[in-house]
Amino acid sequence: MPVQNVQSILTTTFEDGTDRRKAFGAWGAVAGLASAGPLLGGLLVQGPGWRWAFFVFPSVCVPVLGATIWLIGGERHRAGFAQFDLPGAALATAGVLLLILGLVQAPGAGWGSTRTVGELAAAFVLLTAFAHNEQRSKNPLLPLSIFRVKSLAAADITPLIGFAGFIAAFFFLTLYMQNVLGYSPVKSGLAFLPAAIGAGAAARISPRLIGRLGTRPLLLAGSLTAAGGIYWLSRIPVNGSYLTDLLPGMVIMSFGLGAQSVAATIAANAGVPADKAGLAAALLNASQQVGGALGLAIFSAIATSRTSHLLAINTAMPEALTSGFQTALLAASTFLLVAAVIATRTTNTKGEARSSGDNENASAEAAARLQPEGKGA
Image (tube, rainbow, N blue to C red):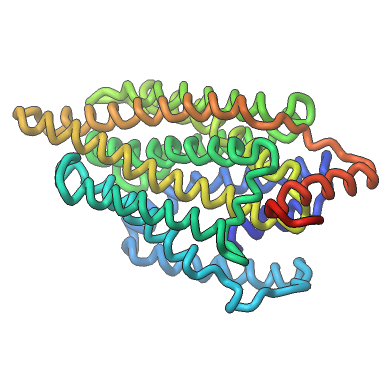
């Protein structure tokens, strides 16, 4: 089931307050435990081969599909395909793909080369055309009016930048463990288990903290904690030790990941009427996915440039690789600091339960903010 569907179902099924916080906490804990994925991946790579990874999804999706049909009520309305914003989907997909391609290939082609400049310029044009299309479309893929919900943009940008740092950290640590320290795929996967446990534990604790403090302090603390953990990891030496150089930073980072994920999910759904819950959840999911892809592209370019420069002056491969990873991880920790700054602009919601009258008034106000300009209620 797509992540945005899960979030929208949780939002519409559980009312504001303790129940919704617990639901998102449980969901966040499961999502945090996904950090154990590297272990499963290592078992597959070292065992039957990486191609078997594609057989994992059907074995999981079939029982989930059955449970979904059994537990989740049917849709009341399904829009026809004719109403689908195909131009918007094409422009957004092409723009983001071209942007990522340009960033990934820039170290090899040269940042000032005609190819790189052309790809990045074309990506800008496509994304600008996407925004223009969304303003004019009768049934836009991303109604820009949703950003009238107070602090929604900041609540989505925070995890976008955060996931850019998180995904890059997992990626470069895997390369470091296997290409510098000589870990096997399975040993590398086992090394990430404490991070999975830490993220899951933080996600379980976060709803209680949100009930007392609100989402903004937790977003801020999670981003700063993750930044500190990744900064620790940016100091990895060539002959690093797991217990002293990797484990502390990974655990610190994982607590930040779990806290930020739950707080961002609740903050991004705060003040959104029920009929827009799917859109808000999809927007949050898209920001995380795009952030992860852009983060890998940006930080890979940084690491590659640093490593290539050192190899050009006859630096040994382990030293050159490690220095590239250090530089990329330092940049990733800086991204998390930026996420912390943006987190201060989000609405501080505790998800308190409202009376039925208050809920009706809040929904009416949010719906009014979402209406296109020039149209009455």
